Length: 124
Image 1 (tube, rainbow, N blue to C red):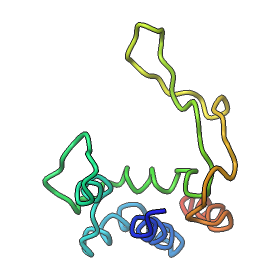
Image 2 (image 1 turned 30 degrees about the vertical axis):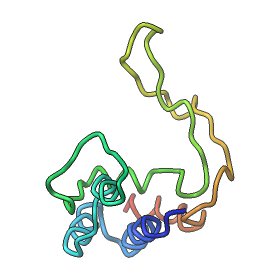
Image 3 (image 1 turned 90 degrees about the horizontal axis):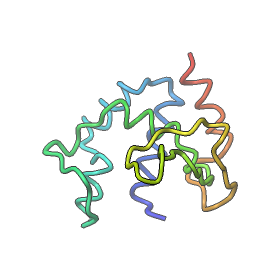
């Protein structure tokens, strides 16, 4: 497990539990000069599809995606998208009830209690 990246994920969840919204979380990470996921990968020598000239520019959609990602509780989600046909490159999202979830696939970063609490925190 990448402990440096896991620390950022835990911080995002912690800020959410403190009642911060995705904008406030993004601002806090930007102010503390925390690398975005792609900037972090670039700093570690891992190739990324899109280079950003703003390594601390956290988008609210990034924060929301992290808060919704079941991988952080040790679950692998499969079949998130499908193709229209074998000749097509276009991918369309699969409905959540048609996806496959594998429990305890890897070590969780966030415990399930915190995961459940984040749902009520983001709804209020």
